[in-house]
Length: 79
Ligand SMILES: [Zn+2]
Image (cartoon, rainbow, N blue to C red; front, side):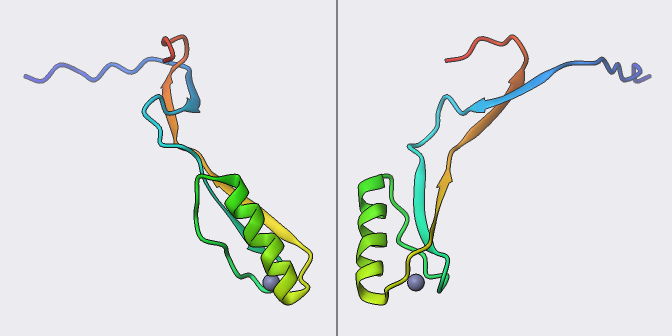
């Protein structure tokens, strides 16, 4: 005989993954949708946008950043 499943209320939090890789970012030109290569170095991404501006005259960009996240029970010790 299988015991009944017990459900209880628990609060969970979302935060940085303790085993995360460095944030990865890229910049996208908002005028032609061309993306820069992905990088972990913001200066590379910024330089790509400045060079793209020089080649195309495009002025508007969006910076996209990916950060690994981890869900844990509220109160669990963070590393
Ligand atoms: Zn562009």
